[in-house]
Image (cartoon, rainbow, N blue to C red):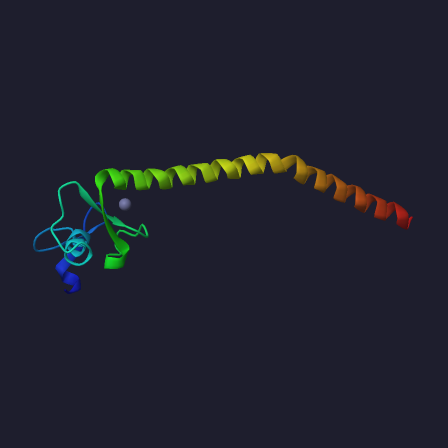
Length: 114
Ligand SMILES: [Zn+2]
């Protein structure tokens, strides 16, 4: 397989120039499940890189499993962002107090000098 044998399609996946077949589906068929793919089966890129078609990066799952997998990931990301925001808001008064206390300490240090 040389570089000229495949191209990147509009969705960002490699396709064979000759047949238009998606390369990751072909590799999954040949090396991951070693059988034909059933309609509705999805080939998922584990590391999220659509161009990384190493067989260990590919996982065959049903459409439902695939949706669930990505939804779970989206949910986790969303929750993490909410927690980050909550932590930022909660930590504001604490950070302000530390700022004020540092200021008072500095003032005391200054008045001791004179
Ligand atoms: Zn996926």
